[in-house]
Length: 432
Image (cartoon, rainbow, N blue to C red; front, top):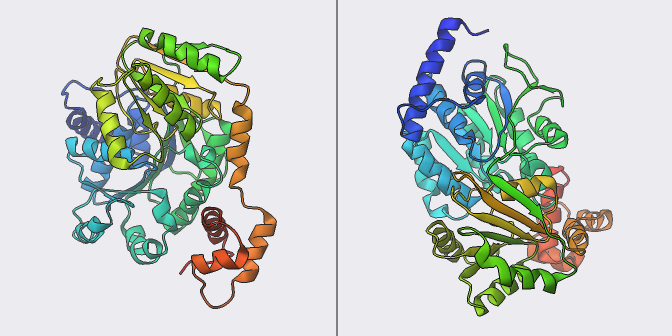
């Protein structure tokens, strides 16, 4: 148990750090924020924070990091799934005086400098993508030294453990291995805006604990995951569903009513082709829109994000590539041409709107084909037993390159690399 005097001292220090983070001397903690910080700093707990978009989950781990660092702890490792999210997090950290750096696929030229900064203890937060945990050189060369010094582990957007599908889950499954290597007194924080009982159970499993959890304030050490859950209702969002008979009818409605929607916003589609085609059709009819997908050039994506933030376009027609990490507090509307894959995905996407405005329009235009589209995405890249056995049989004591293996087993490169990743996580093969 933490003494009352120590708790008061932590709260005063945490409040001072919060003021620096938000730039306001009168800022106060939201319900649950300080409780989460205290559980991490004073009790070194493992915690899951489930709070709505815009509540301030990043404030919890940045303030906790500052307090832990002042107490002599090592750097925080923040596992973050999207590069755009990393950019926003680093900018927020700088405002609070937190020294944050990233290691990801886009800044390999900076890795040597980052590692030198870590050696000199000049880094407070190291942001890494989940894919780094599957990189052999990172796991074997950088990770062991980092584990010895880690002050706190943060898993941002933790619902991805459950809801990012089979092709992404192997990266997150490495978290269990990472946590198993960490000293038991190193705090671990998982954050998300949405978590049903399945997600909570999955997160608890990845944190290396039982699925038991409790939703009360911490009273000392323990193996359970402390879950701090707030209300997810957003009074600023006006939600609606419009059922139309087919895709042409939905596009016709959009062409006629896009200008009636308030401000600027996001039009979500289920596929890249739908995003590109819809954006082209809208532009041909005089609407200022741009397509935004995972196949869009990164510089163009950054430019599109900036244009939307400055209200220079009416909308971005986007796939789920535009979601977590995009922050435009006055986003006027979110419209879905087709239903997202789950209520969790839907909530994440509509949560972009109405964060700093009294009202925002959210409209879902579902299609009869939605279920078939999501079934295809869920199964098209799923490795099967026959392919797995074929790959394992082709591998021997001598390493084989992926291109050579591709020819030996007659499996295309993308599904083969996914299969190898899954087998690697399960210990059946090893990448060298």
